[in-house]
Length: 152
Image 1 (cartoon, rainbow, N blue to C red):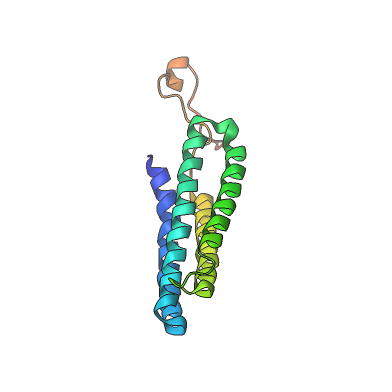
Image 2 (image 1 turned 90 degrees about the vertical axis):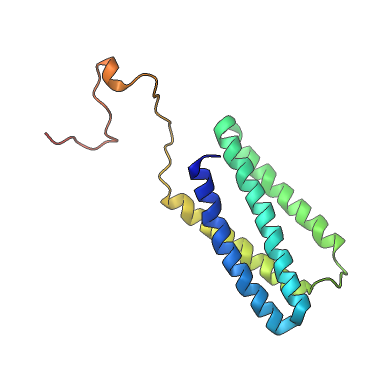
């Protein structure tokens, strides 16, 4: 995994964990232990689904860039279906408070998406990786300066 990938993952996971901790504390105050458990489960579900999707998309972007957008749509659909199965399975559970789970799930998902978007906007990732085997100087051409005029 490249350092850009780790940075992207951490920029989304850390704020999500912070919001999850706040959600667990608030849920514990308003709904007791079951509320805190619901918030913790929501944070784990969000982190697992979003983190796995991000890793799959990053790997797809590097190996099969022409399938990147299609893979994003497939992953989104899969996330929704798996979450539906999870909710249907635990519909009548007494392990956690369902409302605390739902609110925490929405809050952490929005936090993840926002943090990931901000991380991508701030990232300076090359769209085309330079060919390091043949430097521009060896071809007789001047190195490119990304559209900036060179000062002499």
